[in-house]
Length: 190
Image (tube, rainbow, N blue to C red; front, side, top):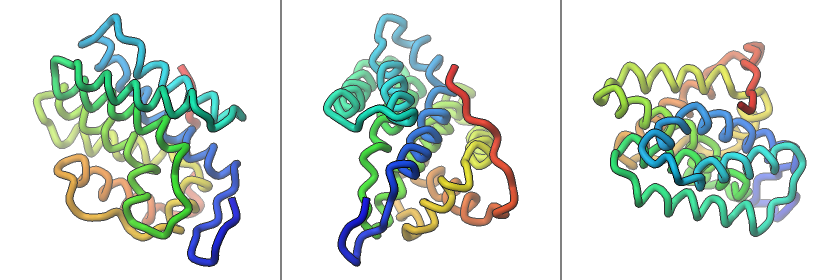
């Protein structure tokens, strides 16, 4: 996506890689939401839509609608862990709407799904921060060189945002420090 000189240039291929990364991060904790709300398929639909876009689908109304629906699903959860799992799914679909603006806030589109997934995992284990750190490490290994390259075009993640903000900054820092020769783990769709 070419644009003005102040914009960051992102190809559709790069955007699809970012969305695949986000979808892979989110689906790791989908079961947390589904255990809490077994009859609500909205977060699963958001992750499915993200994978469809990542594999060549269109970035259209249905993708945006599934992101909003996952956000609504988060409001009906019984646990904070399930809410963060739904937010991870929403973030996966929302990653397709990464704007080519050189603003730190855009980093949330790249890393939000991974951070919310890590937070959901922490909360399931009684707020065990080592579990979140482990999920951040897994996300670092899951990121492809394309995802890291896109991330590095943006300013560092912004401050604030509570624990999810901390996890975003951990993930941001770790990805920017990752050696460029480190191969990513394959992201799969379950």
